[in-house]
Image (cartoon, rainbow, N blue to C red):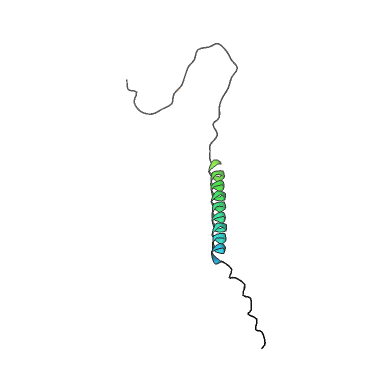
Length: 76
């Protein structure tokens, strides 16, 4: 009587691990894109600040006066 051998079937590859890996990779990509967008927005918005000019003089003893230019009524 001839002996029959049963073929060895390898266990199936778990699908859940691939989904977790691809989901984790997708979350990393989305996170990195958000960081890049935020950095670009900060750089662009930072360039719009207007510089203030300041006038300086040497120290001298004198009276302090102030000139104000405005429109409207003076009320007290």
